[in-house]
Image: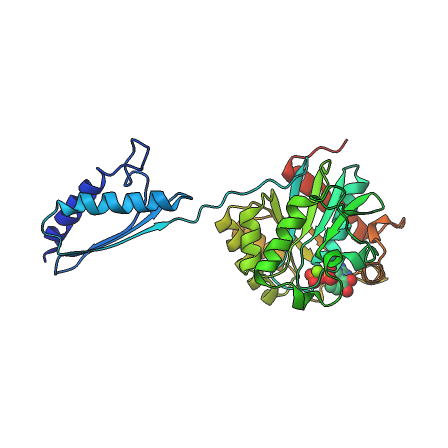
Length: 349
Ligand SMILES: Nc1ncnc2c1ncn2[C@@H]1O[C@H](COP(=O)(O)OP(=O)(O)O)[C@@H](O)[C@H]1O
Ligand SMILES: [Mg+2]
């Protein structure tokens, strides 16, 4: 078949499809953009793929029938290969808080995601905001340990919702409270998603002005379904300065961009080590975060130095930013918190 003839025939098919309206609407299925693929082979066999935005199977069936009917009038079609599918429509559900939710994310574990989530939450609390912290890291819910709340037993005051823990003014909920012990084995696949839903949508923290979420690392199904189900206002990406770490971050960025979740910025952790003489040593290299930021138009909102004190606080269940001494590390947390509030358009009291 000549190309011109093929084109003519395809136009004829599209014209016929334009007579098929979306059930209950006066607009046709073509102008709704449901046609995904159309092709015709030399034997006049027609291939059609339609993807319909609907939650209802009946609508899909009705459209399929109407399409068959409309095309039965075109006599030259030898065979019709028709596929009408339901397009996955996900509606994001609001997390039951008064304010906004920000998720801390990294593609790899061990980059300091949880340490940052905890200290960022407490910095926001120190700035006067009603702050809550949600640990959704299935691979290792470490926040109960980092905040010394591991013994907390969640309970329900009404048979539906769950009471979060509270430590030094911050409300905390974690997968680690639900399944103590070997969680990595217990939390798999659909169970994980179910647990996420419970923690996100049934925890009692209505007056929260800012919710900090520690996301599981990686760019798999778990992260995907989470970002599709819950309305997260912004993401903060954590990276270390090495080139290999940055490569992972690129994957993370493109995942959230595809999902339409805004990225507030990148935090470079373990950026440098400052020795007693005051010199900064860039142990893992320098400028990686900046490079990434330029590449994607995302700002580096902070650089946290390698700080043995930060580590020993986290690892012993003490909260670093709550201690009195001043340091570059503490300063970095305040700078980051300020930037996040600015990006989320949240005013402190
Ligand atoms: N800036 C830092 N300086 C020193 N140690 C850090 C720093 N950030 C994180 N750590 C330590 O690194 C380890 C991993 O951090 P963690 O927050 O558990 O990472 P993740 O949640 O990404 O797996 C912890 O022992 C933590 O105390
Ligand atoms: Mg962690």
